[in-house]
Image 1 (cartoon, rainbow, N blue to C red):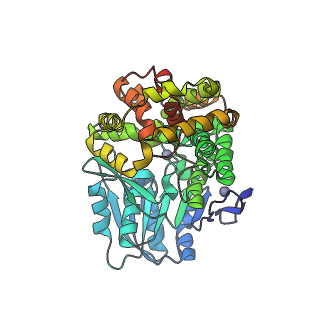
Image 2: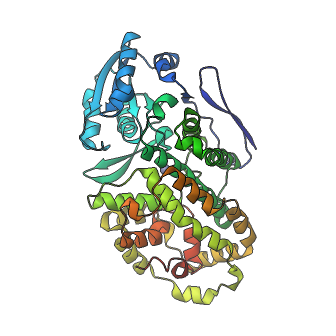
Image 3: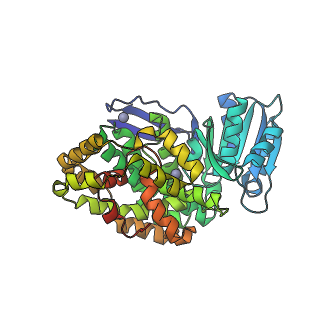
Length: 451
Ligand SMILES: [Zn+2]
Ligand SMILES: [Zn+2]
């Protein structure tokens, strides 16, 4: 197993030498990802090098237009590109909803050859879905180191205020100019850090999934992500001061995390139960007409909530589990369905159960998992021992001024309790939270979250 990360003279980020015998197919990302200071002015050259054409629609919002969009549009025009401007102007937060998507769609002309997104999550996803549906390549010019989704192929969007996920395309070119990124508001920086810190939990869950269910764990992807988080934790002061060096470390961590998705074709290395909790909060807040905080802010808080469960589980003596008692406490399929409807509400519950048909376990399978956990308890402890101390994570987030509690995210105690208990049910992806429930320990571990 080996991998190296470097930049060429154009500041193009390169991952090379992926050698891994984990058994998964590994694909080297083919996108052009540029990170550096003052590089946005080279965007026309980057586009020409990639041969995307000369006629584009440039998408920005009220904040990103003056920040970078206007200058880029002028630069492109002076370099001979034909640019249609699509500035999505909203009074408050710009959502990636049907209206925003429609504005981009109606800006696209038959002769349009590519799209340019100037922004972070919402602008990029609004552009991504249009690129997909119109069969056009797109360029992402990042304006905030706030999430790891620049390299994503899925667009989280809003349709009639309900969160939906639609297939999108990855930008062919990503330009992250640290002079621009460092001007992002502090809460966007905190969001980026929160999204990265959650990956410690994702890694632990992945390893536990490989122990319990024989899932393939990829060392290269695990190491890429871990290396990026460690570097980030060592440079929290530089990130807090929003120096270009600090911001570069943060955006690298986000981009490298995103690149693991391209390498193995799924998000196993970067999202697990902490994302389930954050997604649940967001889903419920939108359902009840509340505006959720930035994605990574919720992921950071959810990471703090999940963390103690891992350290506690490492101290467990699983040989003492009483299998007969666990069996007697099992809920029926009908009881589980009732629980899903209570936790997720009708539409989401039905969707989740349809998409994860094997999530209700027969006793034989539950017993197998418990026995496997018992036989491999030391391996589980070793996986959890790779987590740094909780205090380090809390200190880093405190130093940055990140949100630290569910209340600060607008989550009341009822929703919090539901989220901690249903995070395991959000999808089939294996997590420690699933193992806790399978071992009959849910009421003990989550007694602080009564429902
Ligand atoms: Zn995330
Ligand atoms: Zn691998």
